[in-house]
Image 1: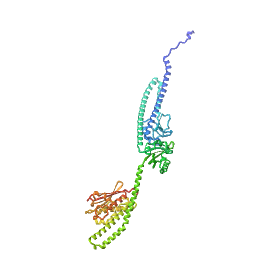
Image 2: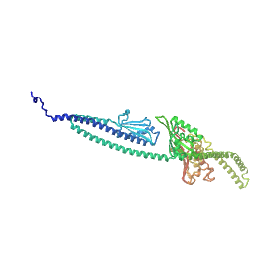
Image 3: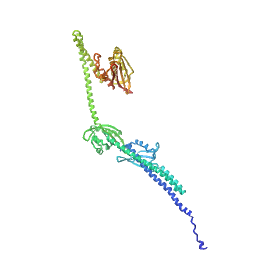
Image 4: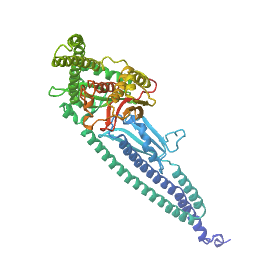
Amino acid sequence: MSSKDNHTEPQPVDLRSYLSRRLRPLVAGIALLISFGFPASYCLIGYGNLRHSASVYAESFAEKLKGVVLADQALWKYQTYKYTKIRDDFFAAREVMQLRVLDELGQVIAGFWQVDGEEPPAWNSAAPIGHAAINFNNRTVGTVEVSLPIGPLLRVTALLFLISSIVGAGLATLVYLFPLRVVRRMEGDIRGLISNVEEARNESDRLRMAAQASESRFREFVQGLDAIVWEADAATWRFSFVSQQAEKILGYPVSQWLAEPRFPLERIHAEDRERVLACYQLAILEESGFQLEYRLFAAEGREVWIQDFVRLSRDEGSGSAQMSGIMVDITERKRGEQVLAAQARDLSRSNAELEQFAYVASHDLQEPLRMVSSYVQLIARRYQGRLDREGDEFIAFAVEGATRMQRLIRDLLTYSRVGTRGHDFQPVDCMLPLRHALTNLQLAIRESGAIVSFIDLPTVLGDATQLTQLFQNLVGNAIKFRDSHPLQVQVGAKLVGYEWRFWVRDNGMGIATEYFDRIFLIFQRLQGRTRDAGTGIGLAVCKKIVERHGGRIWVESAPDKGAIFYFTIPMLKRGGP
């Protein structure tokens, strides 16, 4: 065999097979890169967007929270009941999965999740979480954490992996085309997400501005109060906040309040200090609020009366007790109370002296006047007709004057005893005092031919004896001041609001309007002595009896039209007096 025969001729290259061998790994690599790289990048980008959205939501919730609890630096964490006010609005149409509020120590204050009524899910650290600080007066007092669900992103990513791996293993064309459609859909989702984020950011800005405006209004309100608003630690009495009114009311600068522990305690009046400290210690033990009035010394040494409204709370994290309150300057009110108290004491003493004088005068004058009257009547019987006409008239005048003086003294004694000699109030059926009064007036009723009618009267809390005197005086007046036609008197009552309104109506001669106030004054008579022998004290006694029962009395009348006397007595409460 020749060498020619042993030489192997080169085989022709199969270009399709070559390209297939060469391009298959390239296409497979590209498909593999697309199958894993594109979904992975999509997942990473989506996860980053979710974390950003979670932070935006956290900032939004933090701003809303500050808007609800205002500028509380110490008490905000105990107002968790207010969180639900913004929680419902926050979860509506949101993709938020979980939300937590933590204090400055990292302790969870409140937690919410999307589905109410279920057990709270475990906090998933793998989920995209956003953080936002809660700041009051440039101090961080807590943190808001918002978790967004990662499930939808993982499902889309898994779908991309499945589709791109199938397409990459089968057809290179679909490997290139299908992800483009996915990208377009992703682009639309991302644009929608960006739009939502922008909308959320705008809403957050709006809420931030509203919160700032609300905080500004609150500060203006606090500074505009004529009172000292304060916050302090209950154990150390170190103030964390004091409004500017402290300097105006007490003269001490706010910086001094904040710098010195137990600042106001050292300036409490010595007579009030023990009482004030006891109230604060009891409040701390019972964790309750209180209000107290005491005296503080102002910067210039003057005494200022303060009414302090105090509220106590406890920090669940640290366990420390916090106080907050409002101090109101009541110095002018106290001065007014002192003046009124002095006037009341003077008036009470004066009334007691007047009552004693009226009683002594009327009681001690009875005996000598009785003696004078007896001797004048004796002279009248013995010397009647033995003197001249003028002598008989003088004796008659003396007898009439003595008799009238006796009646005046007796009526004055009755008037002075209305407020001091009355019985204790008890439930009284007013029909009984009315019947007793009509029995006492039966002779006058029979002689005058009067017709007295009445309707059922209520039961009230009162003095039965004085109510009898009240009805007797009013019905007796109607009989005394009757007209020529037959007299009719009606007694009745009806409930008006929370009091019974009684009336005594007659068809007598009536009273002119200008005398309405005068007739209730003591010893004021509209008729001369020839018309009636009374002293003009009956209606004054009626007024005093009604006022002792907590009511009022008045009259409606016109000349020749009769008169209606009204008086009121408070309604008897259920269950007795």
